[in-house]
Amino acid sequence: MTASEGLKKTKNTIIAISNQKGGVGKTTTATSLASALSLLKRKVLLVDCDAQANATSTLGIKPNTLSKTVYHSIVGAFNVNECIIASAIEGLKIMPSNRDLAGLEVELASIDKKEQYLKNCLKDIDGFDYIILDCPPSLGIITINALVAANSVIIPLQCEYLALEGLTYLIQTIRFVKQNYNPRLHIEGILLTMFDQRIKLSFQIATDVRNHFKDIIYRTTIPKNIRLSESPSYGKPIFLYDSKSSGAESYMAFAQEFLKRNEEKNG
Image (cartoon, rainbow, N blue to C red; front, side, top):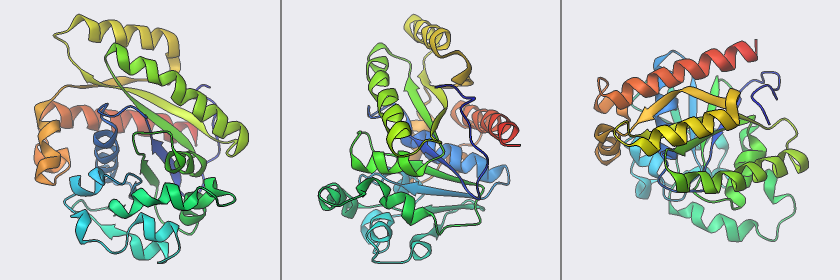
């Protein structure tokens, strides 16, 4: 699949941030992209699809205090709009998560069209330029739901050899979903994360990935940055924690590249 495998812009452009390997910067990418797009005057909804609720806590929201989350919306306990709350960044809202979501895999296991639940949940949402889905670090039913609901996928890829091994399985899953459930789905792009310019392997991985995937690799790379690692523990996205850090500057550059590519493509 290439970046040119596109679709016309719908009322909300839904982007899944997915990689089944943990520790590759997936939630950092989801929260940072959502925050940067909001700062660039786009209306954004971040949907935390992970029971670990790291995206929720990164935005300063305590998951264990919540009674209306993405889980409650998916199972129909509350209207989807009741489960959306504001963040500290103007223009950015979140549908939060907590541990309740962990049971959804079991609850959906024997249900027909279990792949469609998140898509059906999101169809009643309007008024956002972008909906960002932070997927769990697995290829289970919740990630499948996100891929069925999404227009496209951004894949954060850590600049190390082992990170490449799982990429094949993720791409196979995206193709499976495209063929069976969501013919519009495509790979928006691959974002190289945790790039360490002191290590030769980072350059080698970046070169290999760019040579292989060519037009779907973003030019922007995200460096290893201690401020990016620290910000979630303070309940702040990087732009509120340290907007002058190299991590914040890189994610802003990425958001600008994303917008240029996405909005030109969709007219």
